[in-house]
Length: 168
Image (tube, rainbow, N blue to C red):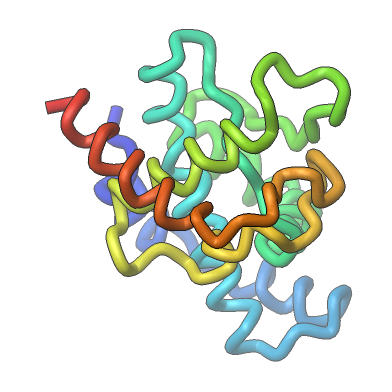
């Protein structure tokens, strides 16, 4: 099974997602260009699922950010399309089940860093900009992922190199 950028490319071409974008525009008041861009970010994030599962055995949690999460909600509302998408790319339905902030096995900061590192390793400078702002409210941990330092993105760039090195 593909993961990361090759899977993302397949995802982009597989279905017509216009109805999902329409839903995001109507429900969240996003401009169409912003909704399209955020949906692209969602596909980047979803393409990490097989990659993170392979690296972590049972599946490493991946950090979601609020602006992208809105598009996931819009996608799930189109249940037939979302089910077909999940069946095709994952062989199963991917639940939207935010981690409880007190129930995560690893710190939210760690999995936020892991997510950004994995995205950088796969997409380089083409990572959706919303993932670079991990200070925004996150559905899984209510904004607790930011450690307040400017070193957050720099650490993630270093970690991305380590992810690539370890997988080579």
